[in-house]
Length: 229
Ligand code: SF4
Image (tube, rainbow, N blue to C red; front, top):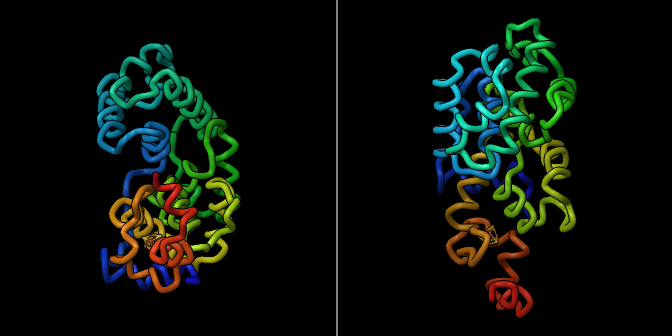
């Protein structure tokens, strides 16, 4: 069985080693991440552009009727759920930052403190908090999406019953800080290309020698084969 750092080492030749570069500012990342829940990056990006066109400042989002926010972000899907969440988060960040919406101070906090600050906004779960801290601020927080969760389970890195929510802390604790970002990106790529939910391409996978599920699948485990049907 591999450690998470070994997974990074073995997948890097296949996909290239990802290097962190600054993304958006943290407030933009926060709203974008809420918009990206259960939708594609393309749709959430479009929804964000429509939101900015309709409300060019965070103050305008804060003061907007929730129905108008919902109409602006319709293209991103689940607008009825996301609009009140975005309005509430923008209101709360505005209140806590005295209207600056500047979250760069999170970079100076410990990882646990920064996570707790974001989680206490309401409607911000571990994945959203980790996205803000990792993508905008380069902190070693690990967002666990469906791909990261599935591949980590198959590799036996986390216990079989660990939920995605629990996997955030479990995996972070196992990874050196400098490997968190590459691990996140590489597992998503791997989950999309070789280790898909259905019919993973185990014979082509560089992780096969140390992957319990890959070993079971390539040896024709009847239980796994039943799952595929
Ligand atoms: Fe996924 Fe198969 Fe590779 Fe294991 S061997 S990581 S199950 S593709």
